[in-house]
Length: 213
Image (cartoon, rainbow, N blue to C red; front, side, top):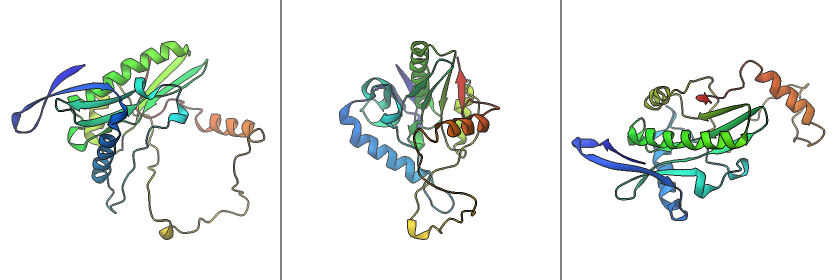
């Protein structure tokens, strides 16, 4: 999948989307640094885009992780599809990481189109009655939001940002006496946890920036 994107000074730069290779790791690390340096709050706290979590997916990195590259092979976009399916609902999602200078451009559009095509394949394989495809971006990334909407995605809810901050500056949380905080006990807490999730998302089980098939 290759198209030409308008780049600075009127130049035309060919871009393409391909699957991940093992020798991409160093370039991906630099991409994440560039994205983190750009995505900062007014307090200069970096909004961290969550990395792909292989433990949450049944897909293979070399097949379902995609990078956007230019003619010289430079990587400026990355996304890995994650999958969670069941007989009733299937969820296929990604956290695209795109270089700030390429967000909202044809380069990111190509990445999202490839993700959507692959998500449709995975959705059919899962045989869920309803399958959702969703991607994440920060609320301040207006150019990305505009692009997502142009592709038929709908913003359904916001989620809190996860940020890194020195632990020494964090106050000790004040927990009401009637509330106990402990680790999850598998087997004992399963029913209560499922009931809580169903109540919390009873109105709409589709995630942010979702598109269903």
